[in-house]
Image 1 (cartoon, rainbow, N blue to C red):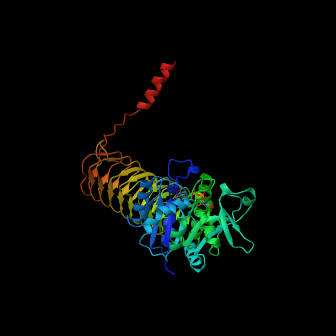
Image 2 (cartoon, rainbow, N blue to C red; image 1 turned 180 degrees about the vertical axis):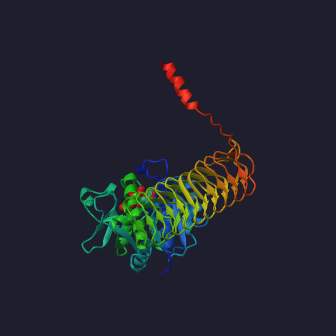
Image 3 (cartoon, helix red, strand yellow; image 1 turned 45 degrees about the vertical axis):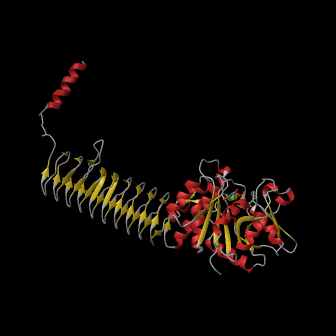
Length: 469
Ligand code: UD1
Ligand code: MG
C-alpha cells in the first residue's frame, strides 16, 4: 500500500461560527484548524496534500506557506461554495498527473482531532473493498446535524442522507457520517462528474458518492468515536473540541513523565514539542506557541509562557509572564516577573518580583531580585542589580544600550541613562543617576550631599502647634 493523496475540504466560510475569520483559521490548542488537517496528513505519510480553499484564500494560503513552505501544500481554489462534491471537482485539476490507481483520502478541514492512523485505516479499507471506497462513521452521544447512514438488512451502506434532507424517521438513525473518506482516484474522477444538486441545499454533495458505491457492492465503513471526528460548525463545537484537544495533549505529557497539578486548568499548545521528565506544571499554567521545557523544571501556578525555552532544573515562580525568551539551567524567575521578547537568562541567574526585561542578556549567576526595568541591556556574570534600578533606554526617538560588566554592583534606585557602560566590578551608589561610563572597579556616586539640621523637627512641631492655638 502506498501513501495516499490527501484532499482537505476547507473552502467554506463557516456561517454558523458568526465570525469575520474563515472557519479553518480558528484555533484549537494554538493551531489553526487547517494546520491540524495538514499535520494529520503529513504524519500519515502522505506525499501529496491538496487544500481546497475559498473564503479568505490569501489569508489561509499565507498561514499554510508560513508553516509548511510554499510547496508543502498544493492549493486548489473553489471560487463559489457549491457543496463538498463541487469542492472535490475543483481539486481534480491539481491531481492531473496522478495515475488512476492512487488512493485519495478526503479530510474535512473543520475536524482537527482525527488520528493519523485513521488515514491509513481508511486507505487500506478502500483498497480492500470491491467498491474502492471507504468512509468513517460515528454514533454521537446526542443528535447532531450530520448526514445519516442508511443501510439495508444485510448491513450494506445504501446511501447517506443529509440532515437537511432527512425525514423524521431518517433523523432517528444514530449512525452518522463523520465526513472522512477514501476513494480510488479513477473512480472519483468518474463518479464526481455525475453528482447532482437536486437536494434541499441545492449543492453537490460529496456524500452522494456513497449511493454510487452501493452499486459497486457498497462502501466500507469504519466506526470512530465521536470525540475524534467531531467537526466544528459553531462556537459550542469549538469549545467542545478545544476541551478534548487539551485533555489529549495533557494526557500525552503525563504519560511522558510530566506532573500536572491541576490537569483541568493546564493549557499546552499543540506545537509545544518538548517537556522533560519530572517537570511539574502548576494550576492555570499556559504553555503557548513553540515553547520548550527541560526536565526537573517547576512552573508554578498562573504562569503564561509564549515561545519560551526553559532549560533543566529551573524554577518559574507564580504569576510570571514570559515571551520569546531563553532561560538557562537552575535559574529562578518570579513571582510576578515579566520577560518580554529577546530576554536571555544564563544559568544560575535570579530574576525576582516586579522585574521587567526586554532584549536583555543576563549572564551566569547575575541577580536582579526585585523591582527593575532592564531594557536593551547586557549584564555580566555575577553582577547584582539593586531594587529600583532602571535602564533609561529610550530618548523618545531611539533605543540605546546599557552594558553592565561582570561583577558590577548597582545600588538601589539607580537610573542608568543609556548609552552607558558600567565597568567590571564597579559600584554604583544607591540613588545615583549614571550619565557617563563608570571605569573598572570605580565607585560612581551621583546623589547630592546629605545635610542634617540638628533639632529642626522639634522646632518645626512647636511652631505648628502654636499656629493651631
Ligand atoms: C458534512 C457532510 C455530512 C457530515 C458532516 C460531518 C456533506 C454534504 N455533508 O456536513 O454528511 O455528517 O460533514 O462533519 O458533505 N466545504 C467546502 N466547499 C463547500 C462546502 C463545504 O470546501 O462548498 C468544506 C467546509 O469548509 C468544511 C467541510 O467542507 O471544512 C464540511 O462542510 P460543512 O458545511 O461543515 O458540512 P457539514 O454540514 O458539516
Ligand atoms: Mg462541518
